[in-house]
Each structure stands twice: as C-alpha cells, then as structure tokens.
Length: 71
Image 1 (cartoon, rainbow, N blue to C red):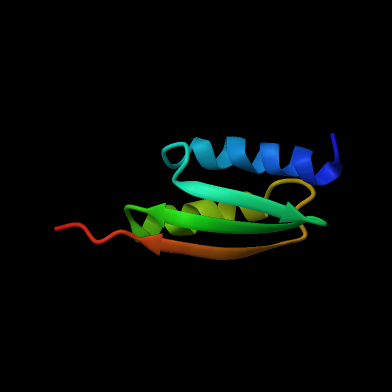
Image 2 (cartoon, rainbow, N blue to C red):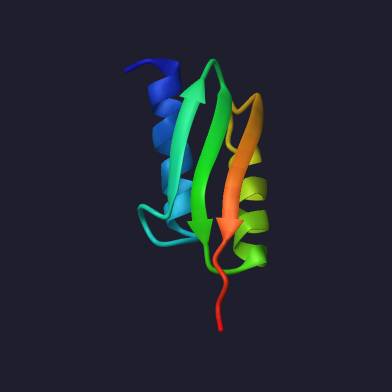
C-alpha cells in the first residue's frame, strides 16, 4: 500500500467518526488531502477539516465541503 493510500484510509476512519460514511470523499496526493462532499451543519465541516489536518502525514488540506440547508 502506498503512503497516500494509507493516509487516505487513516483520514477516512477519522471522517467516518464525525459524519455518515460517504458524506465526504477523500483524495490524497503526496500528503495533500482534498475533501469533497456535503455535511448537515457548519460545525461538522469545521470538525472534519480540523480532524483531518491533525492526521499524521497530512501536509495540507483543501476542502470543498458544503453545508446542506435544513428547514
């Protein structure tokens, strides 16, 4: 397994503890983590970004997470 593949797996485990599995897609390239998807609350977006940035081996993050409007 490559370092990026292992890092992706580690990040996915962290994200899955915070939001439903599949809500956030993760791509890793040379330690840079791209997050895409949607969450239900702004605080969830912040928690995901913060948690992923603390995973060992993450060089930086790019987040394209949108917050779904709830009525």
